[in-house]
Image (cartoon, rainbow, N blue to C red; front, side):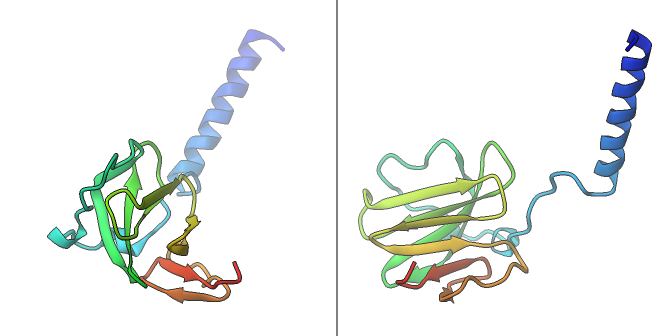
Length: 141
């Protein structure tokens, strides 16, 4: 392939990608209604030991509820589009956080198993809704 035909092929590929981007087919943020509502003082993350992790944007946090003494927050990751789930049990050292650059995240531990799903995603089997996007999963998971 000549240099000119390589350049043409690269240009055609780039134009195709840009065309798809204009139509909204490329990585667009997945919608999480819990993160789009107005932020209040109650949405601030608690002061936790060694928190927040570097990949969690604390300014984007939203408190989404509590399940059996476990408090839950969603936040945006710092590096990619996606979502982070922050699970806090009872003490400032008893917490876990996980982020996904995709369409959701699942975390489990002593406080239970939780899953974050984007808007309009099907409800997980054997799950109880905590908020618009967060579910507690049944004991069979």
